[in-house]
Length: 118
Image (cartoon, rainbow, N blue to C red; front, side, top):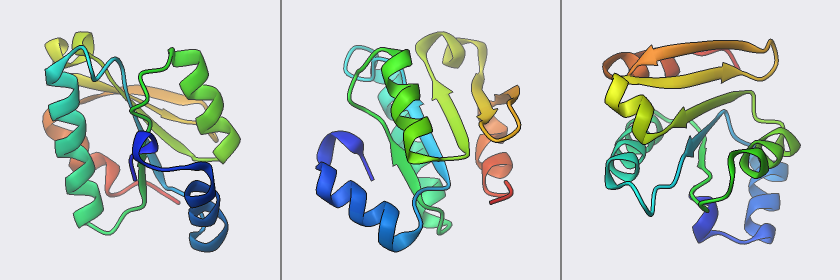
């Protein structure tokens, strides 16, 4: 689900009825950086096709605002995708339950994310 294409009622229903989201993709400035949008869309589709519940916060907000929404929704796994990280060939992953942070290679992201604990 893309946050920019939903409303608060749909979001609430998804969280309440379907148990929320497993992973949030947080693209930084996807409207400005086409590579960020493309990378986010590709990873999102791979994860959804695998049956995972994924939220994309593509509203173009400042990171602090995005992270507050993610924490409020109680999503455990966050992946930040930025133009800078793509240039380095990595995404920034954080387990919000344990505060574990790591950079995962872009090529390994799908394999890593599909095997995360609930």
